[in-house]
Image 1: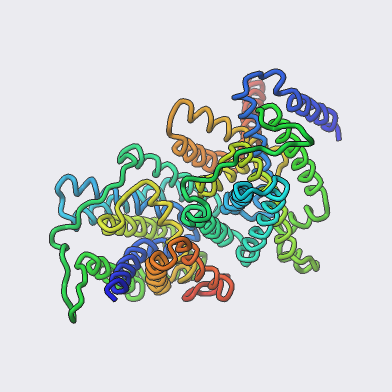
Image 2: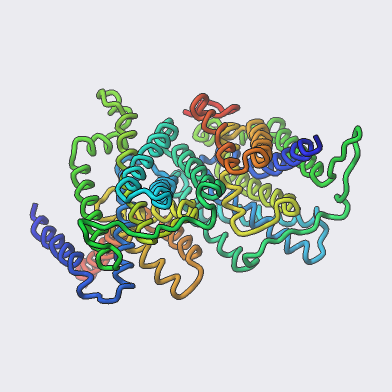
Length: 326
Length: 286
């Protein structure tokens, strides 16, 4: 309980910073990077529901992300309004999530990962090869961003605030989810699936609903992405995007609220910095992956804390020994 | 008529390549429980090695063999020094292979550039043979022949040798195999090296047909995945049958429904998952 004071203070500071960000960074390039971080954080939070709390590692989430983006982009291109396009995009993403869940939840662990990967590749294949529908590699352009209560989102600042609102809603819903009985039962299925089953919980249904919840927010993130870039191409649905989102979750620390957000910030910043100096983002991504998994499998934030603590303890132990010897 | 025949021959040839790719994938997954996400990278890197050997004027078969051996060495080293450290932790192992696949892809792009390479069909394999009035391209037949020979060799090794008995024991029950004194961890390294070598060999064999280009790894990996899901993990017969099923679906799907070919490819996988999750020839996983 004693940690509550500083914690509320830290959250307050974070909210204040996020709210005033465009005021003190006037450069729209950096405001756009902030928007990117927030929208990828929504995707990472969504994947964390499955990876962190459900113990189900999905490598197919880029497909859900892209499904929402493509549905919206194609409907907008066909002349429908933003509301129709966005609702249809979320509906379609939920539908795809349900199919993914039904097929992949027949197993857990590595087999789950393989099936989500294969299913994700199918959707990628549709986006890439079904040229008459998706225009293949050329991608789909989205000409306008929606208006939000009459406010245009065309500028970087306005769009940032729209993303911030969605991001805040996502964080709040995640916080509620984590504390809810549903969140507790999902953690139960992760740690003790058989006991949960014996206690009368429907393990499959809990996982299925968690998949839908995760798919919903992944779809929302996909919508933000397509409005941010005003363009979508099959590249978004490739395995690499799934891996990037997973890296955000893992690098920040799974099964925490803050971890995926920090992870999204780390990955997006590194991606932008790396691609400004070298063309080899994939190489950097791979190296980071290998390093994190080899040395900090619990994530950067808990991992750093652990190494810091153990270093601190070694120092203190050494100091104590030194005192005793002298 | 000749269109269908060409498609059928291409399908069988692709099936042969897929077997070379997925046999190792299936054994690695069956024995080590790792879906090796670098397997497509082994195929691509092996093909690039082959291209470089061929440019030095090395004989085609020798190039394929050398590339296979080089890749087996690299695979063995990766297993021994990176994967082994994480033994027992499935998820970190998978993610490690994923990270390495990105590294390999980018290194290939750096070294061999983004342009596709298509080595010429080796002179002794050019042309076609005439059987019953129909022409069969020799090179495609050679791929199938190689795949069949490799399948037979693997089958002999696994079913009739002491090493094979140990591998089977490891696939069935690794902890018990360890208890009766089988060095499962050495088997892991061996199988991983073998799988990497076979994938690379397949990559060189396929290079004159598929050509080598960035993204080939990402295209082959899902194919290996569906072959193994279809056939059942750790089953060579499954990998063999699955490879040819996918070979046919790929070519015929491409010709008949070009837009949806990729979806058609995954349909049998979805069916198998729903009706028989352990795969056509797989054993029920504990």
